[in-house]
Structures are given as C-alpha cells and as structure tokens.
Figure (cartoon, rainbow, N blue to C red):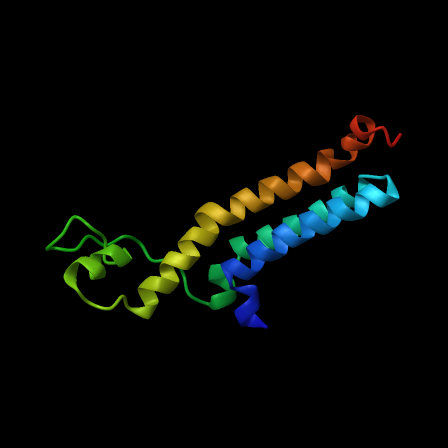
Length: 128
C-alpha cells in the first residue's frame, strides 16, 4: 500500500480518473456538483503527492555541487555524464522533488479550483 501511495504515476492516474468519473457522472445526473465533489478527492491526491517525503521517510536532499562538474550530486544527469548508473537514492530524491515541487501543487490547485467552481458549470450547461 505504501508503494502505491508514494507513486507519482499512480496518484496522477487517480487524479485523471477522479476528474473523468466526476465529469461523466455529472452529465447523466444533470448536476455538476458531482464534479465538484470529485474535485475534493483530487485535493486528497495532491496532498499525498506533497507528503511523499514523509511517507517514504526520506527527506529531499540539498543540492551539493560536484567538484568536477557544475551539476549537483543529486542530479541524475551528473551520473549519466560520468557513465555511471544513477544511484537509487538519487532517483528517489528526484521523484520526491518532482512530487513536492511540480505535481503536488498543480494537482492541489486543480482540485481546489474544480471543488470551488465546478458547480458553476450547471448554469453554463443549462442544468439549473
């Protein structure tokens, strides 16, 4: 279960699925309040993305400049340029950095927007 809750791909898939189900459910019921409710689920998925370092128990590392390159030791590209395999801790750090810095905020914003304003689509669709 922990593996699923810390997977960026799984949580992003849940986000898209939740939005799709909310939209598809809203059409036959003629009420976009359902889309708004599923927006609340999307916020939950965003919070899980933001909490990835806590769930894995591994903090996001600070950038440490390599003495032989302008790249950080936490940058997978550094190891690719050296012709070495990317260490697991570097790959995990990169995944956490993307979850906290990119995906989590976008998903939370999208979920909040839909949760707050999704029901306004009722008027636009003539479901009032």
